[in-house]
Length: 130
Image 1 (cartoon, rainbow, N blue to C red):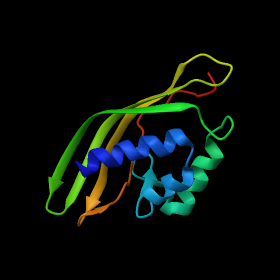
Image 2: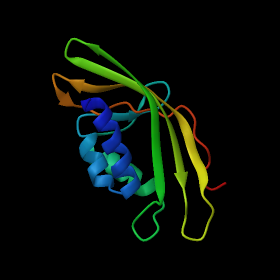
Image 3: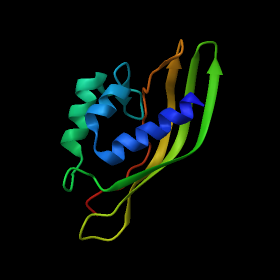
């Protein structure tokens, strides 16, 4: 249940544009590419990455992150999760549109009972400018 809650909190902080909160979730983790190479790690780098990448309208990205089909695997005191995602956006003067979709690959979520949101790697993205 903690892992499902972590996925929900991730969606909430992203949709609120709370990238400092996102960084806190990733404090002990990293965002990697599809080959496992680090893009950003730790709270400061991850907050900075999303602050630089995401356009906001009056402080909000006007998005809704939807995560589905979490597959959770627990082995000892480490749990991993993979899931699907869709991100929609409704800018103030625009239409509702799908801006991203893909799959989060194996991502460690818990280690010795401590939440670790790490390695959430989108496998497919749509161009948000389209």
